View 1: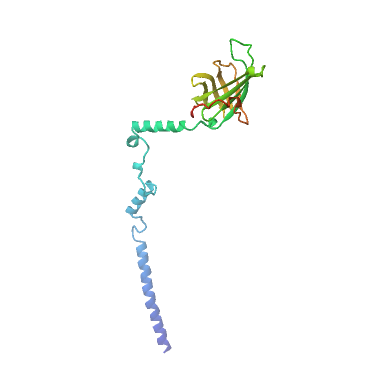
View 2: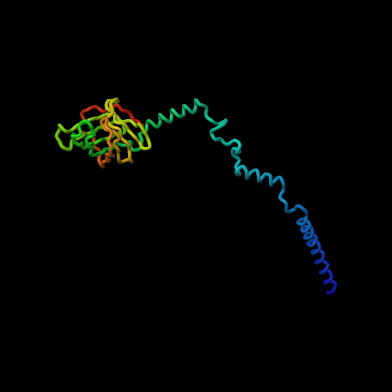
Amino acid sequence: MSSTFSLRSLLSRKVLVLPLMAMALAGCAQLSAPGYYDTPRDSTQSDARIQAQGRSKGEPPSQLRFGFGADAKSPNEAAQMQREAQIASARVPARPLAEAKTFLGTVPCLNEKDMACPASRITLTLAPTGEWRARSISVTDASAGGTRLEQGCWEVIGSRPLRIMLRINKEGSKADLSFVNDNVLRINSLDGAQPTLDYHLTRQADVDPIKELADRPALSCGQTN
């Protein structure tokens, strides 16, 4: 009886092993089939197309806008945009002129017809509203008789470096000045005379409102850039 049981057990094991072997052989046949490891052609082309487009579903490269050709602005639109930019920039003073500043310096006599005239100590205050005020004191006569007070409007007349003109009554020119930097002014001309050497006005820590002119009405210069 024990031999019969052993025979049945052996037959049962063979029955179970045979299907497993068949499945394994079928799998090996599938793996070894030609083209099994090849990437499908459609998938490869799709991947290449996605990579060329930056893997984005947005606007394709052929439709990117560069501002020229069919995407360029018309002359009228470009001119309008330029005018609007100029108006916007005119509302904002240049950086060195965006706040009130006082500059001080001693300048020798620049009058070629009167070389004996004394040097002057000049205090110049620039306001972002476009107004300027100045006090010039003779170094040899600090009395009221040796002091000159003036005011007017400034306007930007150049850049790189920033250059301004001090005008009196918006007509006559008082001085032509250039910004060496935000805190130093170079005198290009003063009262119609051009210096042969470099003379500068240096920014002061405190703003001098030139109180002697406090009773005069403020000028309507507007902001200039």
